[in-house]
Image (cartoon, rainbow, N blue to C red):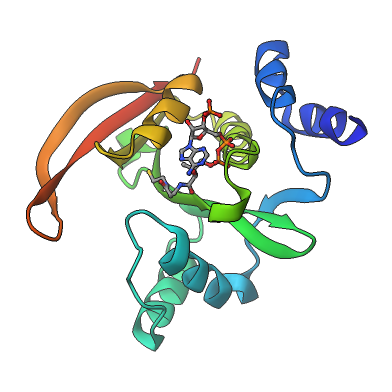
Length: 190
Ligand SMILES: CC(C)(COP(=O)(O)OP(=O)(O)OC[C@H]1O[C@@H](n2cnc3c(N)ncnc32)[C@H](O)[C@@H]1OP(=O)(O)O)[C@@H](O)C(=O)NCCC(=O)NCCS
């Protein structure tokens, strides 16, 4: 309970949001914080194991180098928040701010995942709350993401967090024997 109060205070949650999280059992030892530079290799391995989209992508030297360079080049636009439990990486959320001047008030969620054994415990929700705190500091007006249409669990979570479906990109991604649709979802911040 003490831990729950700590989270609500540090993440500035509304009473309603707090009640949702309270109905889940948040593990005491979960910490949400920005990714540290030296953790990039760990993050890439985690992504290839747990991310719906990147699963199967290998954490190769190429992809590592690519991520490092992007992290340096786009350091003012890119952020990754991680969730750690007893020091181990259990979740992350990567975002990028709009590149063009007229889109600087937009955030695009690049990817997010929580490790299978830690799902359904409120960690994803906490990552999204951290994202919103960051968005408010940056005066962001719109947060956008894309999700596979068959990922109904994630869509349900995003709807609960206030994201609305804006459209569908049909046959956007190759799958084993066909194509997958991507659903575009967004939340407007006041
Ligand atoms: C989507 C995801 C990040 C949510 O993280 P989480 O820590 O499980 O989320 P929370 O515990 O805060 O919220 C749980 C909600 O997430 C949804 N969810 C999606 N997949 C889930 C799973 N495998 N197990 C439990 N909940 C899941 C459910 O709607 C659940 O809502 P409910 O509690 O009302 O049933 C996580 O399930 C995940 O990593 N999934 C695989 C990767 C993925 O789909 N990433 C999103 C790509 S857009």
